[in-house]
Length: 323
Image 1: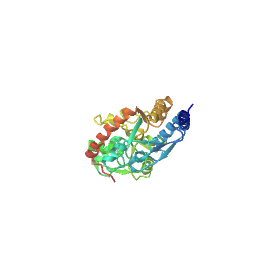
Image 2: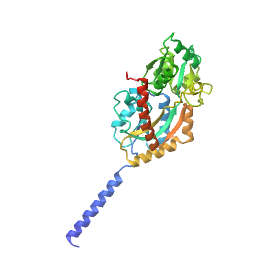
Image 3: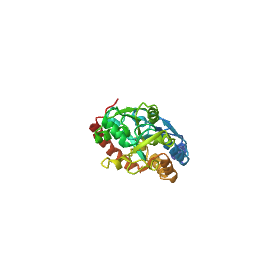
């Protein structure tokens, strides 16, 4: 064998050797813990549900999942984080409805149509209005009557400016021809404390208040779904009392930075769907007063585009402004 042929064979063999070694060393996804950003304070219904979701997902992915709570900024901190994060599948975020609304109100630091990979729609909240147990407002009709009389300024608190609850309360005010004052807090825990301390008249938000209602410290006046909530069967829906007002669920989902690989997307989508459709996770949603609203990646992306356009009209109609 001549020297040129031998050199060629050696070079080819070394190339194959190093190529094989590189392939063997490439870690499969996921090779280390995954972080999910929850844009609310710890302890709320969203945080609790996502922690249970993470507990079910982790064994199937073979890695732990770290929940990172980042409240404030109108519940858009997760969106801001993944807009600038590396698209490797290790940073994910919960996207609630304000993510599609805030960019129409102020510079949000992200573009919902360009900066995200929508993985899966997860759930929808049971939303409504509640008051302290000793409140003079015994029913929703009492609450509306007081607002109409204008003998007292009616105040309500929500987890953030531009939240689904904030928007819904302003739409209700327009529908009934009443006025009330919105007081935003950084998370639902702050709203609950404000109601219990008599700083605001009412809480507008999700089922985070279930323990307070069950202990007799708060009373739910109305919910905003199409049907009565399983956790509040004796409470009427707004749709019952005013059929022209459509039900509201404010669904939320999980997204990643734009540009994650097809392989990573397939892994996450497959495991997430398996968990979210399981009877065990359905029980979790029911326990914390949430509705199953599953959408796959394509449907969720289409929903995001449609919702982003609709929110522009709502913001303009209600004259919502950043504070």
